[in-house]
Length: 345
Image (cartoon, rainbow, N blue to C red; front, side, top):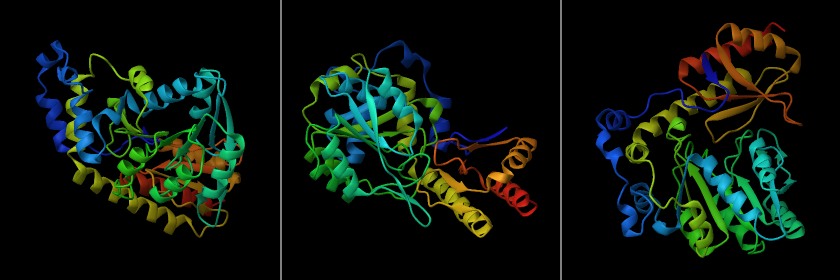
């Protein structure tokens, strides 16, 4: 089966990752890491501090980005009377669930459809936040499933104009596929104590099965750090593989280039077909509006070839499909199938 429905990684891990796994010494698993004796979380947080220029004590680690999201939302929505979190209108259903797990409630702010993209309205986010005064504001950048993002400058504008008591959580799980810019992260988390930026090794680095997430946060949150950090350290096997992945940017950048080929193929081959709209995406998936009248035939044709894509059911996106950008031959096969069904409708 070709799984192009959950934004997983259909390519090969880097040579460094493969060699690290092959050569890992199992004896290391018999002992805790000793780096916590130095007042540090992990050899991974030390390396991330070097890469991103953020002090090690302001770096978060978790069991995937999911763990960081859940820890953050549960902690801050469980403190005090304000249990409201603002989330994007079209976004990952899981945000709403983790808020509900700790008695929180969600308020949605709009995403606006334009000619070929969905977009945040920065002034509108600021207005909503100041009017609703939520305990947390969540921004997904890039957003799943729409594929749009905000810039570091736009994030800085939001932070500058909202209440400091609102914790801002930026989910950047899908960052890095288009841009290599990370220079905005350190200045923002050093300036704004109410900012947390979450990332992961699951998407760009193609290791969702490793379950390793990381993030950055502003100063002055010792209570949350004590809640989220692991006193005895982290999985030593995962640490070794994570370091190898972080040292393999050239490999994963080449994979991202193949994904960009896929974006262009969908736009070129399907963009002019009646009833189709190809949305811009800066993530490892693409959102496509299609004629609902071909849904059943398209599902059958893809199933016959052992391909799975995401047929959206979210209110407002029912006429859309989300397709993970896979290997070139996978992308070509899905694109050809969609085109064949559409032209024979």
